[in-house]
Structure formats: structure tokens, C-alpha cells
Length: 294
Image (cartoon, rainbow, N blue to C red; front, side, top):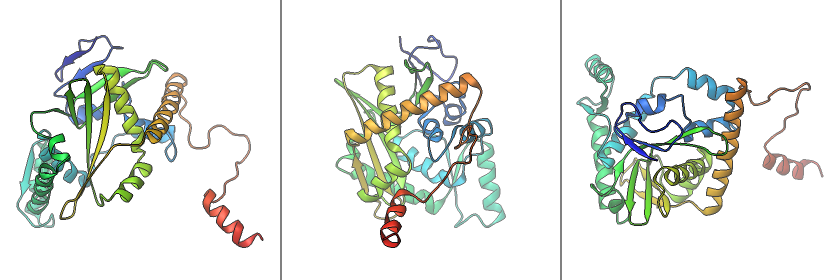
């Protein structure tokens, strides 16, 4: 059974699929009873369970450089934390910093006028885009629903929070919006590799299946450059990369379940009795061996 709730007490069975509406981003990310896509990614190289455990138990304040992305999301999705525009050219004056700190203290996102104007221009370009515009059309979807389910293979409680979810006849369409420095397809491809977005894709598809039980699920990335003219790249992941992401998630879930059961959160090396060897990355070893070991 799936139960839709507000940000209060969840009334569905603890192991069942749940939709939570009205849950703040802070509450969502503070949840230690379930694991998200970013958590699963942090368990695998270049991360490790020990670092994941420390970061989960010692959460750091949100990085201020993420404020722009939060504002861009709010303007594109129509939902999010309240924004406070600080009418200064930068944060160097005491008055600007005081206004910024007061906004943080009261749960608002402070942003300089020039940066807000950039975010607004980006949102305008999204609305004009022939593909992204209809995807994010107001009233056609729901923003930032929190979906919870239990992985049947490991018993681990999982969660995802699609930026935008469109429930169409026979299809659930999850749309993920990312503002970035460079939105050209080659840069997007590298970002998928560097940030393991193929794991995000696979887990979100799995979560939508588990919680909403649609006939079909699609996951779409919308990347937008933060520099004018704010160009946009809309893409779906290849099936092979999604399969790799799913396999990575399965391994990370097993690691997480084992660590939770044993209470042991190993680092990159784990328990060894001999000092392991290390070498250069494979490509560099091959290149230099070809040049010098002839």
C-alpha cells in the first residue's frame, strides 16, 4: 500500500512504499533511517563506508555555493525555500553580510541581485525551450516528492526525491534539472561519469517503479549552463549505462546492509595483513610502459 502524507507522521507500514509531500529538503537529507542516491554513491570508490558514516553522523552546513542552484531550481520548478534578494553587488560590505546571515537564520536563501537575475534568465530560457519547456510546464507535474521503499534484496530502506514528476497515462516521467558550468553534451557525458549520475538515474527509476507502480518509467536529465545564453541539453541515459548504475547501486546496498549489521565501516583498504601495492592509473601505466619499457 502507498500512502501519501504531509511532512508529519507517516501512517503507512514502515516497510511499505510511501509518498511524502511537503517534506523540506533539510528533513529529507537529515533522514538516517533510509539511504539516498548520494549516499549509495558515497559508499563506492572514490568514497568508502568509513567516510560515508562520518559524513552522515557529522553533517556539515549546506555550502553557500549551492544557493544559486537552489534558487534556479525554485524558479524552474515553482517550489522550494523562500528567496531573499540582497541588493548589493557582492558580499563584501557588512550590511550585505548581515542581511545574508539573517536570511539564513530565518530559513530563507539569500542571493545577490545580479545572481537572481541570472537564475531568472535561466528559468526564462527553460520555458522557451522546445523540449524542456513542456517538461516543466506548470500544473503538469509535482515538484520534489519524497518517495520511500524497502529494497527487497537487502531490506534496506531507500529514498529518492525527483525534481519534477509527471504522471501521464501509462507513464511516470521523472525529470532532473541540473545547472552547471558547461552544458555541452561532451561535458554532460563527463559529469555522468564523474558524479555517477547513472546511479541516480537507476535508483530514481527503481523508486518510481516501487512506489507508484506505473506501466512505464522514464528518467530525463535537463542540464543548463549558468552562463549566457544559458544553453540547455536534454538527454536520456543509454540503457547500458543505466544497467551499470543499477549494478553499482546493488553493490552499494549490500555494502550498506553489511555495515549496518556488523557495525564495521571500513575505509578504502579494509582489513589486511600485508601492505597492498599501488600503481598509476591503468591508462598511464600502459602509456608509459609502451614508451619506456621497450
